[in-house]
Image (tube, rainbow, N blue to C red; front, side):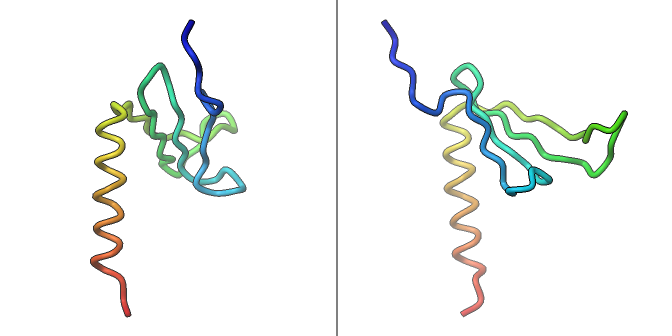
Length: 73
């Protein structure tokens, strides 16, 4: 029997009003969805990127390093 994590398949939005990007766990990978600012038939359009969990962790690490290195103090 395989145990599932409590938040498997959850969607994690970047904004409370759901107007921004989101990430989601999909079959052992991470899907990153970025809106492109357009709509079709009333639905927002955007780009989905499927990443391995290790690649997603490395991107998160690099984003934090970039933010820390460019902060104004």
